[in-house]
Length: 241
Image (cartoon, rainbow, N blue to C red; front, side, top):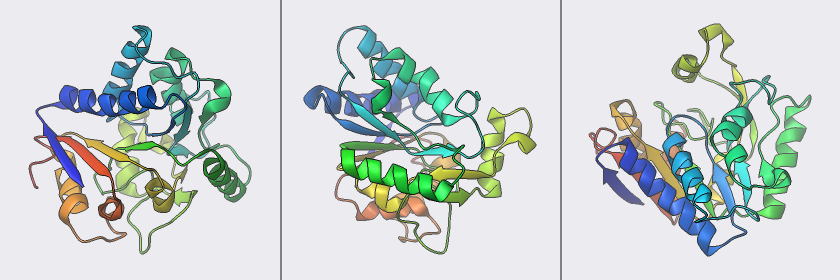
């Protein structure tokens, strides 16, 4: 596991974007694993700017998103599909049929999980998977648990996660309590993993993920088992390493 410490969010975003852009430039039909949230927003902006400057094409790229809230339609401005469309999808030349994100409105989430998993197995593996990390050490929506959930599955969000995400909603009662997410084995199937985090609130989670005991109580700690992981963080997020 390689840890790269930058001065601030912009530098973290620049470094993460460089990884994404290099993969796509070197492999025009790359398969990308993508996250949502505040951590990757800067990375997406840089990538979009590079596309607009004709420095990269996504015509043959396929994307698989980590997760989606259950019960939110794609048109809901808090859905992760909406987030991705606003920050990336609508700004580059990705083909709609090459965009994959779990359907949080599926009537049978178990069947949707199987469908998503099978599609990724058929079109993958992901050449690079980008991750954020929750304050409680979650990756995707894999919350602290008694065991590692391997594959795409339904999850009950912890109160910590609900409270952390409440800032995006009018009131905490509006935050979904369930989601569908890639499991840790699915995430680890990517050839390369890049985790990005900034801010002192992530420092404890980063320290436990990078050098703590490998435990499902800190889902990100499983990344220590992967052969090719780069952690890009700012000085505040690195303060407890």
